Image 1 (cartoon, rainbow, N blue to C red):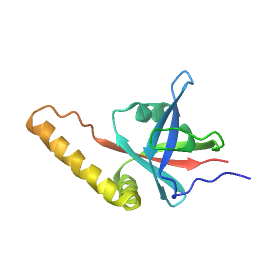
Image 2: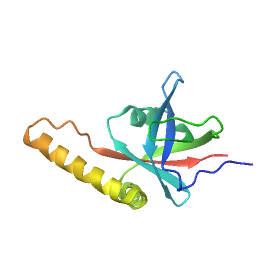
Image 3: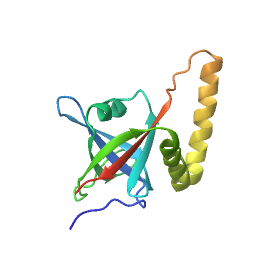
Length: 136
């Protein structure tokens, strides 16, 4: 029986791979979009760089801190970085799934970005959307 990820879980541990093959796990919000799942992240982060080099990902349902239960199945997938209408679809799906929590995060993000620009110390990077598809 093949394990399937659903939109009911809150967090997934997204495992990307360094050039030398070492795995790096990151707990992320995700949302189902047709037969794929989407993630939003900053552009200049490790997982984006690693996906550019290697589209293979592993996924496991986890808690907010990234802890994975022992019996949680490991799922294989392929990721791709997206822009334009696909990135907008990811943002909308995540906003719908996480509702008020996402809205509060967005308000915080926008205020802190504006504050950084006013202080000429903007540490926020542009966003990148990631779509991943589970493989057999």
